[in-house]
Length: 283
Ligand code: ADP
Ligand code: MG
Image (cartoon, rainbow, N blue to C red; front, side, top):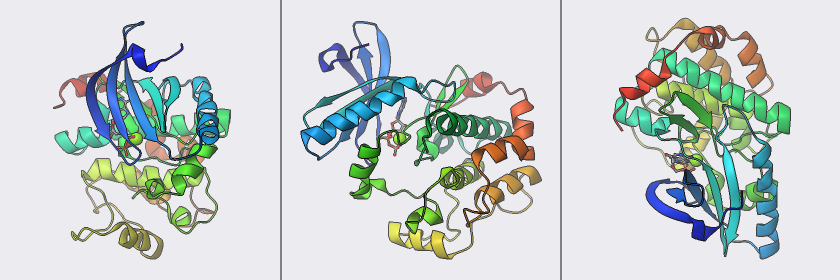
């Protein structure tokens, strides 16, 4: 599929993040609704071309837990990325409008993220690098998928040199600039799951909003957050605590969690009607 700007008709804006805007668009030749993300990159044409080339790996990332990719193209300093449109949007939007998720849905969300991470790493040696609620998308057909993983090394580098690369979900070792591995994504998953269960970002406990730098210091220097005692199943507490082990050497990999966490095992085996739950959501 050869995507061209003139074939895409703007429908609505879906949201915006650090890197740019995401729009819902119609690909007129195929009558396909897509989500089109703009990433503004201030780099020379050769570098931008290289990024678009590297993004082509996305064509090979095919998994039920990964948002599908339609194509990428470049216009001036902007890189456009067209992907599958997920009609319920991201899980952060869903919980902010509908309150904390039920445990059964958190279980399925957790399995989707872990399966997506395991697929990316086993098949493509890709580490996600940006696991957070806004990068987990839902579809009313009952689908949960991850998006916005780091496929292009050149793009990662050109964004890392700006402030765009920082996030509240970054692991202690990443903040400290130490080695980055799949376990860093597990930290981010732990915070994400706690957030979906509690209905708010879990870190830190007091109410004063922290600056990005204060939060980073907090993550590196203070104990990991924990769930309020007695409100959640013990297996879920155990999973969150494992994800939020500060020392990456002691923290489990996605695969270990998938195979050995009691919460994950039960969630994977459980029959959950995500579609019916989704039908009750405020949009
Ligand atoms: P962030 O992930 O930091 O919020 P993004 O630019 O990646 O920033 O995305 C902005 C918003 O656009 C997301 O929060 C999400 O709600 C929405 N969005 C992104 N991709 C899609 C998609 N494929 N389908 C539907 N909505 C999307
Ligand atoms: Mg995103």
